[in-house]
Length: 93
Image (cartoon, rainbow, N blue to C red; front, top):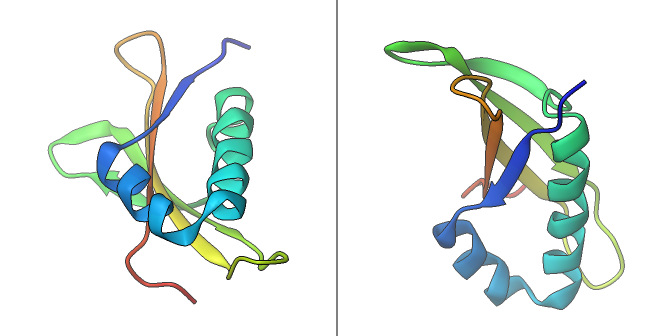
């Protein structure tokens, strides 16, 4: 299986800065995991006009010094190489 390229958007990175280093580390661990398993979360749908790009949601459970985070990301298998862009959801549950 080929690896995907997973990146955190600049908007998500700015939000993560406000949550502190523990949250940043947790999301970085998820980003690395998504490179090997880009369909890790629950599929929420497709991007309109582009049937190849799927939107997924996953959750990072609360840890010491950080609340639980809902992560929404898009997986685009084409064009190669596959890519993932993660963004922290504005709704934290």
